[in-house]
Image (cartoon, rainbow, N blue to C red; front, side, top):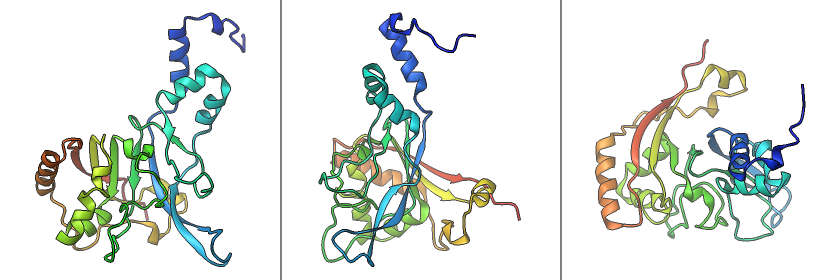
Length: 241
């Protein structure tokens, strides 16, 4: 049985493009997590909290980007760099590519806004991220229920959640999922600790209808913002004991 197909370059361009597209990964959910790294501007004993994808970029994406001109073009037709840092010297972010139209972003937590000044944004990633970063092109965004409730329940913090530094940054958003996350047996086996779990807080009372009404009003005031669909979802199941 032949291990190579030497006639591939002779196929019509349309077929070759389909082959490269079939090589791309299936739609993924990219979990954003907080981690600590040493800061160059501080003492080596001090560390800085940043937000990065919980898993590395799939090897197949990096391979296709370096394989040939056609594979690179087919990959960039769907994938973008997740973060676009303002400074070329910013080494906090490893290179990660994602497909905004197919992949989802899950945010376990958000940065509670400072009372002294209006923050650039409430999202957990570093302030050096440009507003034009590809992460803001995502179509499906998932937020942990506790993170949502902490900002939604009070009028003075809700404006940060819904304002220019909040959901309005996602101009192409189509679906918003508020996630009630429960550990799965697989997660437990993979090394989850009890303090890793995001159980709903006792006072969480998220009702979809008030949120949808606020979204409709927000969409009327901001024509460039597309009103996303809203879903309350639960992920996983209780681990066996």
